[in-house]
Image (cartoon, rainbow over all chains, first blue to last red; front, side, top):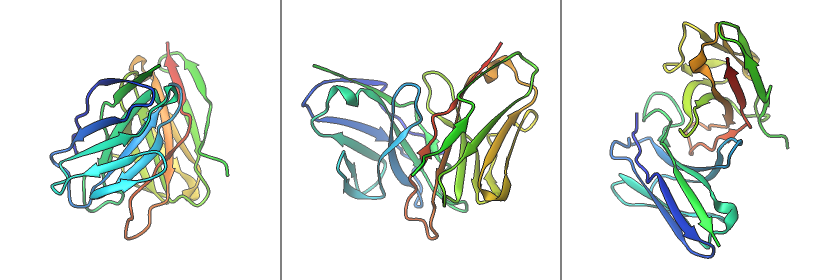
Length: 113
Length: 117
């Protein structure tokens, strides 16, 4: 299993940029890094996925250093509605290589006015 | 397009009773997952199907849990008999995984909250 470590919680204010870092020291060659967001009583929702360097979409950026042993999810200008649990997921999509898909314990982000 | 559908949304049973959960994945998705999520924890993978084949069921407690994915579409997860410790949310997810893989975005259903009394 690709063990991941994230901060348990983070606090921020509306309009600020939030960076959540995930450590995954035993990431395998075939593994992708994926971040999910989860609100209470809902299933996780995909935010962003990457393999190396930087990935950006309309809601977030994902920074992955060359050694891939960590990754940072960056949320620009957060709002109250971004209050949720964020999970870092490391694993491979097919059998035969890479780590099993594993969710970490997640980071509870709380955004205040 | 409809998302992943799960039913029931809630289920309350007494211990030692059987229970079943149903999942209808997004059309065209070849991979289906069942997860268990305890309060305050991340989802834990129980089983993963690629089409109709269970390719990873190492975390499934096979003495009481079983799953099937008929014709590579819908799936059912069963617990028999249920124990108090099975109380949790059971999540189903699906994805389309290309070969070679280009990554894997999973789409989750709302989950079934099981309470065992």
